[in-house]
Structures are given as C-alpha cells and as structure tokens.
Image 1 (cartoon, rainbow, N blue to C red):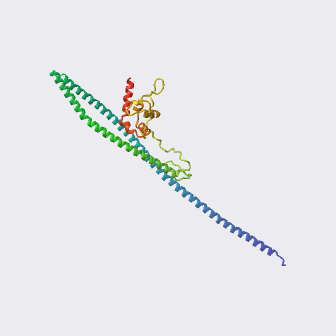
Image 2: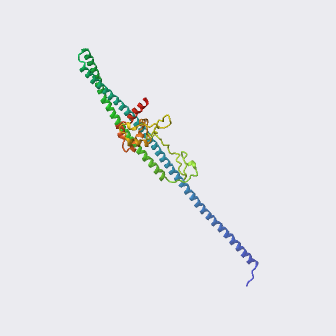
Image 3: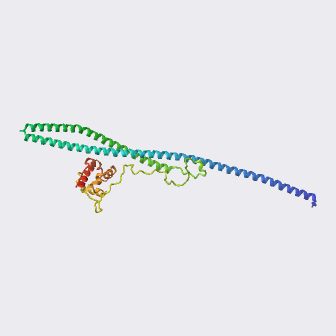
Length: 319
C-alpha cells in the first residue's frame, strides 16, 4: 500500500472543502426557488380571495337594491289600499245619508197624502160653505204642488243613491284587488328573503355603500315597515255601554226587524249585546258578523239593521 504524503492529504481536504461549498451553494439556490414558488402560490390565493370578495360585494349591492325597490312598491300598495279603504267608508257614509233623506221624503209624502185625503173628506162633509171650500181648494192645490215637488225631487235622489251604491261597490272591488296585490307582494318578499344568497363578512366596510354590511347574521327585521292597523279599514269593536252598576246593558236585539232568537244568540256570543254597538258598527264589524252568519251582508243592508238600531238607541235615550 502506497504511503499518503502531505500533498495527497492536502488535495483530499481541498476536494472535500470544494465539494461542501458547491453543495451548500446548490442547496441555497434550490431553497430560494422553492420559496419563490410558495410565495407565488400564496399571492395567487390572496388575489382569488379578493376577487371573490369583490364579487360578493357587488352581489350584495344588487340584492339590497332589489329589496329597496320591493319595499317601495310594497309601501305604495299599502298607501293605495288605505286610500281605497277611506274612500269606501266615505261612500258608505254618503249612502247612509241618502237613505235617511229618502226615508224622510217618504214620510213627508205619506203625511202630505194623508192630509190631502183628510181635506177631501172634510170637503165632502162641509160642502155648504163656499169660503171654506175655496180655502180647502187652495190648501189642496198647495198640497198638490208640494206633492209634485216631492215627486220631482225623489227620482234624482234615488238615482244619486244608485250611483253612490255602484261607486261604493266599485271601490270595494278595487280595495279587494289592492288587498290581493298586497298579499302577493308579501308572499314575493318572503320568497326573496328565503332564496337570497348567503354572504360572508366583508373585512373592508368602506367598499359598501349606503352604510350596508354584508354578513352571515340573521335578519333581525329592523328594516321591515310597521304594519298599519287601518289598512283594511279595521276599527276596534265598540264596547257595550256600562250601566250604573258596572255591568253591560243588554238590549232586546229581536226588536230589530230581521233578528231572530238564533241571530241574537250569535251576536251575543260575539260580544254584541246592545243597540248602540250595532248602530256604531264599522265595515270591518259588518264583514265579521256576515262571515259568522254565513252571507248576511246584503241582508244587513237590505233590512237596515244599523238604521233600526240607531232609532231604538235614540228611543231608549229619550225614554
């Protein structure tokens, strides 16, 4: 075996050192390349997340605009329904006034006819005095003119009553259409909120407009408009007038034409026990009673329950 000299040992050491330095340089280059590749991957993921966030923000803006438009249309429909309800109430009040005027005219006509008949009988019994006959003739002529005047005034009033009644029916139909439209809009609103896209939180709120936030929090309903209790013309049911001992006064409702024992029992079960309550009934109360009595709405108007109740109430007050 040849002996190793110092030169051989120096060459081996130098070779080992050069190999170690070359390996360290190659390893550093490879580590740098891996680090650059990892950084590029992370940067690409960050850019993708930013693009997704921008897309969700735009989608959220579009949804909020749709909700705002729907709420505006919903409010317009509610306001229109409220106006129609007020117009229907005014039309019914005008119709009641015309009914009272027609009733007064009929009573005046009956009085005039009875007076004319009385004068004719008086003329037949007292035909001996010419002056009395002339006075009676003048009185008859006066009453005839009054009767003709009343007969001339009655057809226009009846025509006005028919026109007002048709107007009230048209307004009621329009109100029912508006209520149906409101129900459709409310159903559409519930579908919009149920099918809306779930949006993740946005870290930069400055990108949102109108102070709106995108989040996964449940809708608290703070943006919902408050319900108007008078949209359907509802008014609270009048309470029975208390007597001195603190109990509700009960009237004999069968005194109203068209109210029998069974109907009176049903009205009492609904809390209607006095003439005053029937006299102050609103359109909502009439609808409630008609639903309970299965289609008595036209009969309530035809038999004029409200007018009869007012007369009986006034008679009770005078007594």
